[in-house]
Image (cartoon, rainbow, N blue to C red):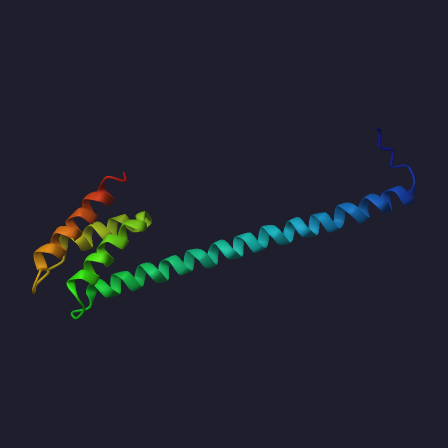
Length: 113
């Protein structure tokens, strides 16, 4: 089937199809970009909450071990995670368990190169 857009009516018919589809595609692209930024910001906030939890003097060692494990989900922050895990001073009961979990996390992040 050959298209011959020789009359104004044919051009208007095609414009009536192409323009709305183009607008729909444009809207979908901008929605996707906005949603991606939103998800990225939520991931940053979650990462910051985990880091904040690890820095709190109170809290159980078990929850801090879980937080150290959770850091493995954020490879884009690997440099700061490695520094945190290797340079943190950990005191108190069961500190060795937390130190070990943080070292495992640092080793994991280093292996992602």
